[in-house]
Amino acid sequence: MRLNKKAVASTPQPDTIGKKDLTVNRRTTRRYESSVSWNERGGADEHGHFVRSFLSIWQNECPLMLQARVYTPQSRSVKAYNRNDTRQMIHTWKLSTPPEEVHFPDESSLDAIARQLPDGWYTTFRTFDKGARVIGLSAHLRRLPHADASLLRRSLNHLLDHFRPSEARIRVMETRAGEFYVSIEPLKLLPREVYEQGVKVETTTLQRLDPRIKSTTFISASDKERRHIAIGGIFEALLVKNGRILEGMTSNFFYLIDGVLHTARCDILLGVTRTMVIRAARGRGVEVRYRALKLDQLSHLDEAFITSSSRGIVPVVQIDNVRVGQGRVGEVARRLMTVYEEDVLKHAEMI
Image 1: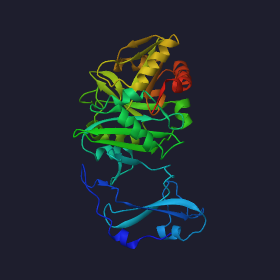
Image 2 (image 1 turned 180 degrees about the vertical axis):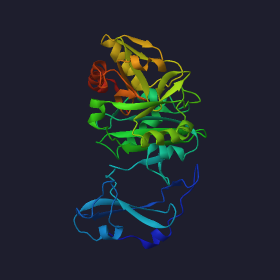
Image 3 (image 1 turned 135 degrees about the vertical axis):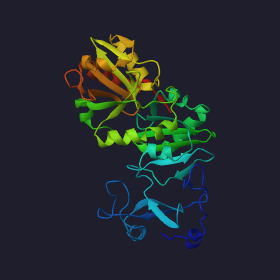
Image 4 (image 1 turned 45 degrees about the vertical axis):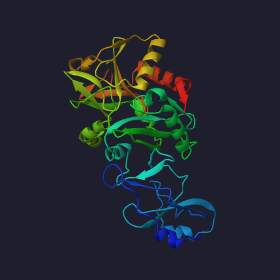
């Protein structure tokens, strides 16, 4: 493989958009294809990044197609990576014609990326059926005030080609200036024991300014709480208002008392998975009522679980220091998890 040194030296500095240090790879970015390889000792580490230098990869002789991109986010450099190795990487694009891949100082998570963009709205979901379908995609896209749904679907289809046939987790963001961004990462499924043993959650007085809107300002506002529960080994924080549990910080909340399934209806985000679970429960003869849980009712719970698009139904066995029911996954939660898995492709929309 031969790199054009002149091209590398003349690569223009990337434009800056949005907040400080956000960089864009322009179409002037030089791309080079080569037949180079890497052996086991020189392969990818556990984070999916190459641990050998570009030059040492360049010198190998066994064939493996790599794509080298030349760009200058902070200083002039040459980066090479396997374009098909997306196992541990988050990629973000600004939607334009064509989409422009953007890079951030902190790309450790979807939330980290959202915090570095201007304020706006967002929605997050996962794919099914080898990256071809999404549950409630139309409802997800309606959360973005000025979205062109057909254009977004076409863009998602194109960008997901980098990840297929693996499943992916996607966040679509609209800034208040009307710019759209898409972040995609390989889907990391929760460990099986989360669903078999349940999780611990805690309550917080943190509130959304407008519960019906998924605003990126809440991601920044809740950062301290997110760090707190991560340190404490807590799975989720439940938002409490006027002594009642409304929803999770990133999920909807359900609880069972005397065979009746309850969930809040007011002052919450009406989640896509929440709607699907309500329909599934009623379709299997489970009575569902809309009522937020009072904190003084915690000791009376038979079961509890939370729902979200990326995680499905996650059983809750402890809230604060109070054990839920017998402290194990309840029968209704198990039934609904089974139904959810069986029905998921029936209700998933083609992208």
